[in-house]
Image 1 (spheres, helix red, strand yellow):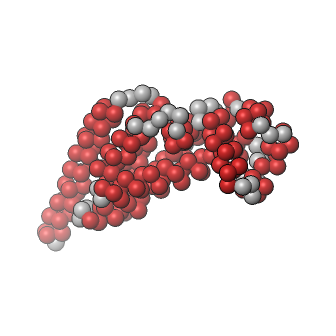
Image 2 (image 1 turned 120 degrees about the horizontal axis):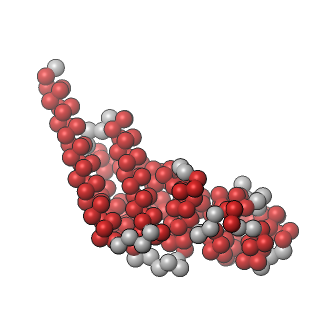
Image 3 (image 1 turned 45 degrees about the vertical axis):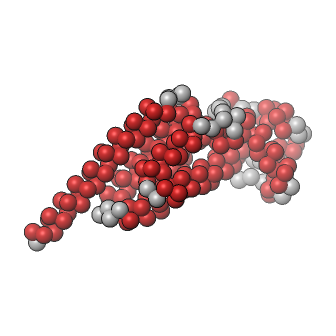
Amino acid sequence: MVEQRFLNLSPETRDRYTNQLLDIFHNKTNAAISVTDIVKGLEIARGSFYKYFKDIDDVSDYLLKQAIVQIHQDIQKHLDQTGDIFQGTQAYLQAVAALDPESKTYKQLRLIGLRRRLHAPHGHLAMQSALSQTVQKLGDQANWAFDTKDYQVFQGLLGDWVMNAVDKLVSQAWPLPAVLDELSHLHFWLTQSVYARQDSQTQEGGRR
């Protein structure tokens, strides 16, 4: 856990240090980063590092938690604006594809993607957190007859797919049309499965 002394820094200093740390961590594993790298990047004394953080993993966890909160807000904004889980996902992916590689959000996505590949399930849990309440709300609006198991499977499938799609855009240089084509197929498969399940449950209930 980040030391209180770091949290007590002025917002300007804390934000500057956080951005500098993100520059260091977003495309490297923890093992590839040294305290010396951080001390030089932040231009602080070595002793100051240990006043602010326990170790390298502590810094990484702090940055990851910040990134998860930001990505949660970004996804939620697009889902709320469209009122549709798939249109919102498409709008979010379009926004991701338009990001400047030097932007903070882009680097946060790189950080989540890298840590997700190396230390699952952080990224998946982040996406589930961002999608869960909205999926339920939009599913209710669309009269999707989710039972608990259906909802968990749907949420997991969509969360996994979106995180993979984001990683393809920011880390694997996939073109946006190819990612959106996958979303179109996913939309068809999932919605047809949901409606088929709903029809089956309705027919079964009618026979009772």
